[in-house]
Image (cartoon, rainbow, N blue to C red; front, top):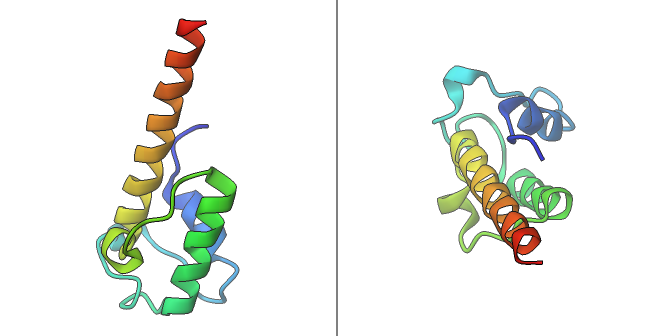
Length: 91
């Protein structure tokens, strides 16, 4: 999978009317961007389902800003890719 980008995040959030994140807003909290706690939980569930990443321990701490979401998803995607490469090399 290619890197998870702000475009990917906006596509997920775009289901909520008026919720789109610009590049200069990646460090603002979702609350400041008008994303409520329920939408953040739904975002997390979609990320887990669609990108096969583990659930974060604390959604607000680990995924509280768009930048944190991008880093979290990309870190886990990279870890999975490295693991898959190691498995292929070992066979």
